[in-house]
Image (cartoon, rainbow, N blue to C red):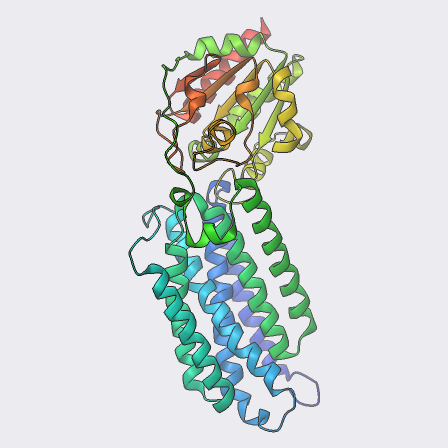
Length: 417
């Protein structure tokens, strides 16, 4: 930059790079279905982290000698150092999150005896290298700390189980924002600082909201697991009742109030279009249908809202958990499609459960509840669900898409008669 102006050659280079990046992003995003949005977000976060690291390195290599007598040298060096650390963690952590969400890496959290000690060693090393960097202004400690941050990002996110990936995504989102703040200070760019602050703080707030929704601390999510929360659970006894598709059709046609609670199974089965069609037909025939969304349902915040909106479900029939929980006693039928832990009554009824205290949707309080699942398997938390054995609950086993399509067709034909 000469005299506050950017040379035309540099602007052309910037425009070319932005065009290539924007075009590539557009092509990738257009190929992604709503079900794979979490993987897309994680993948793009990794690029933000890598960009932050490379920018910090470039800033040091191109201008550190000018900071020798600069009274603001500490701010610049701090932005370079912390930007590279946060960016490095975001880069590799987001890659691990992508692999876990896409099923290319095991869902279980990394477990070994020295896991926490390894984190402490990496933290101490980063602090020591930071002191060396600030006192010597050498590139070597910055490079070493960045490499440690790459390992830390992998290690930290791999230590988080698949059930907690939604929270992990919001944490990484917040990290990417703070990395951007560091770049703003480093480059003396107010826009980067403001945008980064918005991303970082909004990601942190969303993380807090989701932790409250699971009744867990961020510390337990990142460094613990569901298994570390509870003692011995109360044994679930009883026999479940199964319903056929035709029986469920009859229950829905005879109802006046229906609440549908979708989970990741709806995303995985891509059953949203059939559910949207069934919802439309029922509403047109004076059967009130609403949707209840848990804050941590799906693989990332808002995924189910996007999925339902894409299928044409009106916004005014989609509600948050707290808005609907008091209405279940007046509900004739509650349909649970591919959700498990977020409708588990043991969260309220069993103080020894790993889910104890977690806010859940009270679907069992409806006159009749129906759970769509492939099997009787537990959810991500590994906790058996007493809902399956309640007297007013029925299990409907099968593929979510096929089952919902049969229901949509059956309900449509029955209401047209």
